[in-house]
Image (cartoon, rainbow, N blue to C red; front, side, top):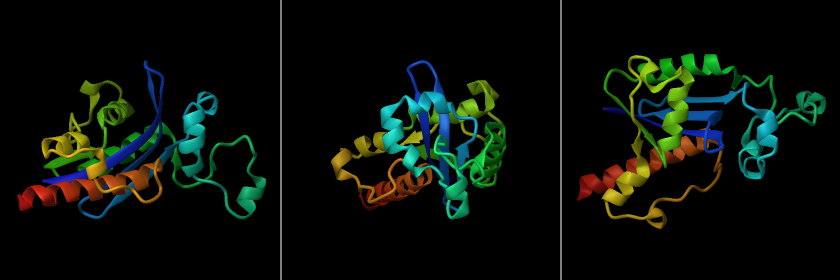
Length: 183
């Protein structure tokens, strides 16, 4: 079994979930990170928590690009990680399929992450072949082992950057697996 740990940053309002960024790390060493060029920028600007916690981790211009980047931009549109949603969907599908036929997805508090991931391709029944229909949840595994949030390894930096969060998810999942194997 090959695991892919992932995290999505998103805007949700109780009715919709809009992708901001996605980070994925695979047990085979590959990583993927993308920022949704088509995110609802106006709605994000009105969301204080996202502006304070997620937007600062999005790609920013450097050097001349920073000088010429309009202040109204939330992120640097010319950054190579900034892509249209359809391209992200194709690349995520390829990333998952490249892990082989026997894969599992893992996320921390992953219910909304999985819905947002599935919506890259439309409805849940539209998931491409090879993309799992569910995500294993790190918090569920921790509870199964009798652990709480404070018992888990804590993330030292990069929180709310989707790729940094995915890397941390992988570290926590592996830590939980090693505890289970030792038991």
